[in-house]
Image (cartoon, rainbow, N blue to C red; front, side):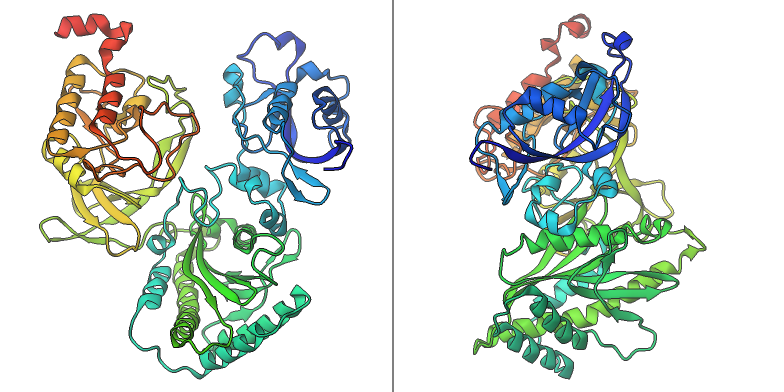
Length: 620
């Protein structure tokens, strides 16, 4: 920011027009004026809201005839990726500038990125007119990976779209080891305690990395050239059936190349199998983790759409920062997800045998599993007939055999991802939702079935889960049947197989309240759970199931936070930004108490709603 108070602001702007005759009719949606545009406001006082509005209206990026004769009070603007509704342009700008009344965050000299960290008020039905997701913006007006590295918050501000290396804390996607068997095998290979087989190529690469790590390059291009030479040996395969090209994957639209990697060529297709990003030192030039992940996302946009839509696009990612190297697995399921396999491995010349063996194991596993990933793609491409992919196997988990509580094997068949409704008001006590809200996939839940039976299942992946609480309520008919549970195969995650309650809906989506008998049934179930020294922690309407036809069938779901009294705690990433009215005493890492469950139960009590008081009197 310059000394005179002027600044450079970068905004994502979507403009809409409301005709004068429709100004008072909120049911008439405004007209969209072009696609989202990345607008750079140069040398302008951010505090001058009126001037900034005028600047946007008259800016050359928009002044192509579409805005001629339009008055500022007729314009509605969707500004920045975190605003969840369309509001009058002056109000949107006011919200942004008010949020940043303090000095703005300087991304790099001369550039300030303005992001709205607080959601602006909705304007009636306008909220449903247009929802600009980061993904759609980035697909048409893409930031370069290097820009993402410098300020990943520009993308991450939309939690529903982008995951950046397990950030933000409260959001996670489907683990890559659950989605792809090669990643699972790679992770297990890194944890293996058996001696690593002697491999001349791996030893050659280790020596090369030691040499590279001992040198201090003045330019990043020098470092990249040395690393490309070293890694070209690691990924040199003599198998004529393996067409893996040592070449830096590139974004076709912008001709932007990553620092290095591998290209898989098979069955008329060409796509990345490994992408590498280098930095002279840790943190120089932005965050390499974010940059390489954005390369992965944008590079796969160039792959044939019919093929890309039937695979999670698994790819190895490598970052080399200074003398430290990290390896990741990345997928494009519903969210771009990147899981770290191994913390940074330092390849400086050292006498530490443990560090040397760790690097040797990592390189050997990487060399062997790159080929396995190539063959996985070859197997998947066998399902392609012309331009039509006939299999969803690339989008579904590989783990399909479990053990039931009695120790019997259970084999399932995955059908699809689990679909649910977008619920913008889900955190309110008794929301009323538009019945035409779009459906989205919950990336960590899948529908499945038991072959040769009529049993329909839900398979859920959760970092935390209380099977004790689930099983307790299931046995008294107040939770879906628990078929199987696996907490050891996918490291760090629990896989839960349960009944799919297809005739049920969550209370907040049912567009109705509990009857008195349903409430008594729910209260009794919670009371019995507490008597067993168990607590839930999240007994909101979104976690209560009601039957769509029978008014006596009520169940509880979502046992991610549940556990023993005095032991179960709220997760560190719990949403405390004001969207949810948590009971008193709730907070990150704090104990979940019986009183918290009782508070949620009281808020669901139908006696508090005059609309159904007559029903209660009749049933009592």
